[in-house]
Amino acid sequence: MNLELADKHRETLQKAVQALHTRTFFAHYPENPSPEVYGETADKEGREKYKSFLNNKFTELLQEGEQAWVGQEESPYEQQELGVKYPFFEPETLISRAEEAFHQWRKVKPVDRAAILVEALERIKTRFFDIAYATMHTTGQAYLMSFQASGPHAADRALEAVAAGYEEQTRFPESAEWEKPMGKYNLKLNKTWKAVPKGIALVIGCSTFPTWNTVPGMFASLVTGNPVIVKPHPKAVLPIAIVVAEVQRVLQENGLNPNICQLSVDADDRLITKELAENPKVKLIDYTGGTEFGNYVERLPGKTTFTEKTGVNSIILDSVEDLDKVVQNLAFSLTLYSGQMCTAPQNFFVPETGVKVAGETVPYEQVVEKLAGAVTALVNNPKAAPHILGAIQNPATAERVQGAASVKGRQVLSSCDFENPMFSNARTCTPVIYEVDATEKESYSRELFGPVALIIKTKSTDQSIELAKEMAMNYGAISCGAYTTDPQVKEKIMDEMGLAGTPVSFNLTGGIYVNQNASFSDFHVTGGNPAGNASFTNPEFVIKRFTWVGFREPVMG
Image (tube, rainbow, N blue to C red; front, side, top):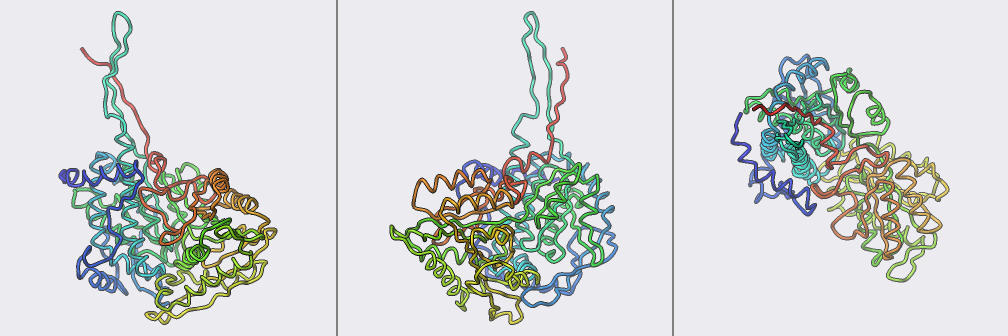
């Protein structure tokens, strides 16, 4: 193994560990896809590389003996198949190969595992642009979000998991001489400790953020010595396939078995996620996706699970300084990637008495009108809209928006298709807004995934807080936005939503939105409500992947 890697990446690891503690801004991978940062030809080469994958076999993986070539991805922008085919392996083949690789990987020191994984991330950096186009044409994200979320932001989240795992495995000494005074003599023992990994890890990806949501669990398991089987959503394989290929290459270059990290895909007529998840040799499972399957994963016996499921995210409007700036911020949050982010707001709680704006009360009706107007202005902006809204990943999401009429309330804003100047066949729809009374809980106590917003008329801010908390505690929430100029109201929101395990963003205007989470600073999902049982990246996210085992013997002589 290349022992120089530990020296090469020592500074990066140290900075990453320090960032975990300070929680201030830290980004190892630049998020701007500019030629000055990534090179004059990087974008063009990435686009050409992406095109070379289409209607071809993906042959970059170092996994041999496939039983078939399979693939079912479709571009939401062109609504036609990508034609990329991936090697299919029986679950038993993947498990046995992982088991074999485990006994090599677990004996690599934590510092060397961390260095290998940072090296892999540096290689992945050279693929950010082809990963971006792959993300764009599997998820429907706009180009800039595809680049940032699947490239630098995902790599930073992976580095965060590596740093956390490295720190937790080196927190205690490897050995110590233990001496206990007994009066006339002392008892002496030599003690050593090992962080023993739990075994085979399975990472189940989602269709909307195929790398950002996958790499934290993937790299957390790898850095703690567990072999990983990555099982992406069948409609979004290519971005994470590129990532796995680069990891495998670095493993092989360092004399290690590339099956330490394997890609597993469904055949068109054979869904294998449950077969993998239920295999008794799989000890760790990371999952992102719908609640029903997430609950199934959490109930599997003999597994340690890390889940991110669906949630009902709220906005609480009480009092603001500048309502126009607030509704512009909220309109962007609602419209970004057509509401297909797990952090996107859905339930907007507004008191029937209106909202205080710089001391004056603006009536409820006017607040609703202003929010609808801000969304309309954004989606009617031909230059901005395609870059913000992107395309709809799943046809079922578009149908859900059209079918939101099942909501018991008044439609404030209807949805419509919009023209994408670059992709005339793109699957699109703009946000729909409904006004719902607080008594109609059935309408707003479920996630309506996609660009759907419900404005809920409450009796007061106190009721708004009570309902937002109830939604989070009963159905989960990943984000919450609150607007108040009253310190006491702010304190109450912090207290109540804190009890519901929900992070709150207060008074956001301008260029930062409730949807966004920063690596090394924000904990994504808390594990404190039904939206998920884990958080990246807190210590628990890595320490549950290994066990401390001690060994001791008397000191001789």
